[in-house]
Image (cartoon, one colour):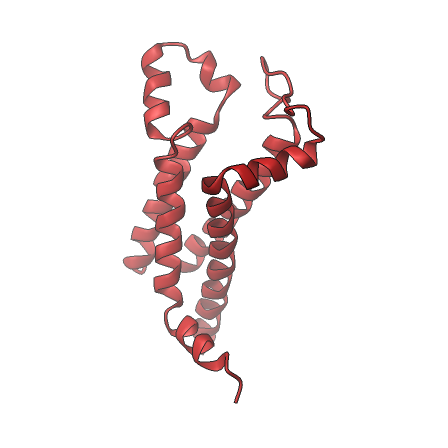
Length: 165
């Protein structure tokens, strides 16, 4: 007997719960991120200098996307448009992933108006690896986002299969 069978059975029967926990984790990481979350956004808005949000749009993106995840959790729990929510969740997780690597490979958003590329004296790829190694929060976030993408994909497939039956 394959020793991974009990683990697979547990994961399959608890896929929704696993998705809930991962989605909540990803939302909380982004909503309360120490430098890019809600508190930073409030500080920037209160400063009255809206141009700061143009040169670094991450606080707005982090907060709005975290709220979207929390709304998505509510919709799934209420059994409203689950397949659509799973697809949107996968798109958001892909956006987080692509956004993180684009941001760091471009020298911290060096493509944005008013920002000069910053690579910390490293090759862009080395800078990305350095950020992931040096920040346990970033590493946990990327792992949680990738895992959530996989779980949402499985939930989407299961939902599709159950609707065909």
